[in-house]
Length: 417
Image 1: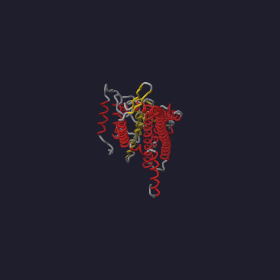
Image 2: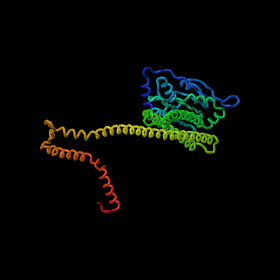
Image 3: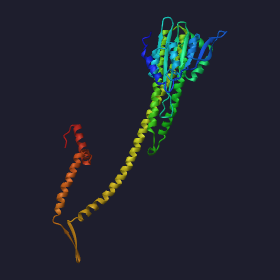
Image 4: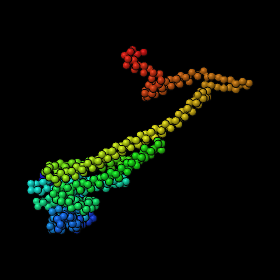
């Protein structure tokens, strides 16, 4: 038994299955599509398509090469019984079950024995791109490839796309012969389908990135600029998910190449073909990864530009409000001398007396009290202002020139004045 085996994972899977029973648990098994590769009278290999259940598979004979298109390896009321039967029938390791339960992004493993038996698997997880902000859809699938002691090969595709089913149905006879010689060739077809899914999601997101990019760059009038920053960050979040999926599948292909190199003969023609096909798929995923990096930088550029435009818009608004305040201050300054003079002459220190033929103007002898109170009070107010706002004093023109002269003297090591 493999060191990766962990019985507790069966319990975790059963717990999820138990949680999925409400409001009912379907006791019937699902019909699954299968492809049995048989040899015709002329010696050619061809797929025989059919539909069956897990119980019927257990009772029937097994061909040298069989493909099973099973439901996603996550327990639901409809698929729970079928998945459990498949796991038991093909001795699926608990590590495979654990990966789906934990929703891992990247996983690949190979377990082999001296008599030619092996088990290998991988999981795929990618965010499905939609315009809705509450989108919770994910592209998920799992692939389990095994060969028993009688050299019978089985590939179980959990949650595979309909496009992959059509692709396998249309494979020519020589490809099936290569798959019998080296079952890893089946994974190259799987990777081709995963590349198509990831590429489709990336191009779908590129449409949104291009739209916001064009809108931002075309914003000539800063004052009219408007942007939904929640939508921008939603696009950036989806891009991060796709970049993660791209990095994960790229690492999976790299591990496949290493495993194929370590466990097969380099002189084998089939091995060289498989390695060549895997390396080609690797270049395709590298291309997707480069495009994801480019889109990520473009999106960051759009977000930075949007923030700058908003800052310019706010600055323009502040300047407009500041201009209004300057107008108010200028108006106040114009009428300030008039109001000051009117206030002083309107006080009780000045008296205008109409005495017959002429007017008399009298100044109170206590007028000095006005200055005795006003001057100290003004000094107190100015001192308080300087105490709480010392930085404003340093901006006075005379002090600025004095500070610059002192700095120049310190730099030149000259005595200050």
